[in-house]
Image 1 (cartoon, one colour):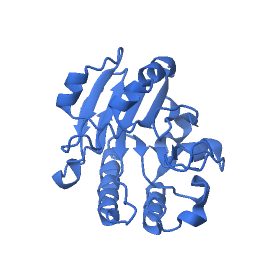
Image 2 (cartoon, one colour):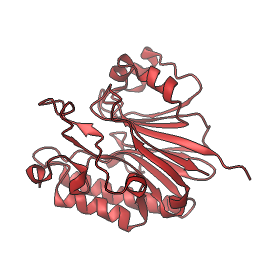
Image 3 (cartoon, helix red, strand yellow):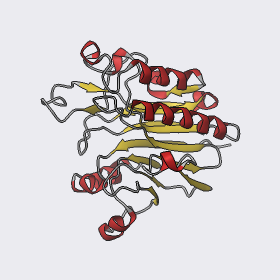
Length: 258
């Protein structure tokens, strides 16, 4: 049976309208991924209808937040899914449009924009609750078929995942609680595809807009593709397109051969 290679990319675009003004359409036409998981789209259905985006060759699936101009996820897919699921099934967590799932024949694609704990850690409890429900949701999906889970996880799991770990110890995105949850995801059978392919290579996916952080490469790796252990041998490559501009995040991707 002939195997098919799928290129799957995740990108926190920090506003799809801003991204469209910053060559997102050109990137899409050049890169030609099969699946694109977007986070922080910052657009509701009414504004999107007015914007009239044209992503030729892609089916579009959107899960905006109820609050206008905030959060939200979307997936552009060259392959029509069998099913689309918006949210985790709980209104307390789904109002922010953070999870969008597409079911395909061989796997579930789970696109997630994980909460930011905030500088004062005011949303740390909320994030831990989200993590708990997200993991239970993924494990439930895995009972039917493997999962490909990408997005902005808003956490650097290891010290090598950020440029200045000592300075950021205990700060949002690098607290012991958030890192413990990231470890728990892996302990429950999910595979960090970038580490699987690249080992301890240091590369970042997000940079602060302050202090010329990107020019100095003072970044964090907080965007991931995790896959079910059953797909481990199917991962042929993983990458971070850290030279692609247009957002404070870089596109991150993987190639699966199924």
